[in-house]
Length: 86
Image (cartoon, rainbow, N blue to C red; front, side, top):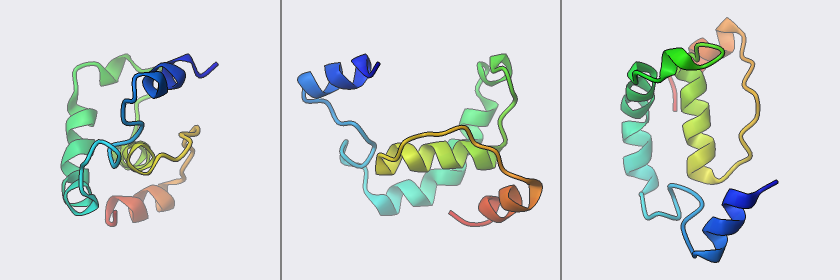
């Protein structure tokens, strides 16, 4: 089930942005820009559901800290709060 993770581990590859040497300060400073760039990517409209930038930020934060990425279901108020804070 986690074939890719197993391969990355076997090859001693970083599993997170943090493990890849990206400082938390730099990551959080650029988080909004990264989420906007991901939203603007030409492949984004091909997703089964169009993501909010606040949802992309959650995915990026999970990828930085190594948290399990789950299906993101935010109501509008939660999404608005996240869009104004990292």
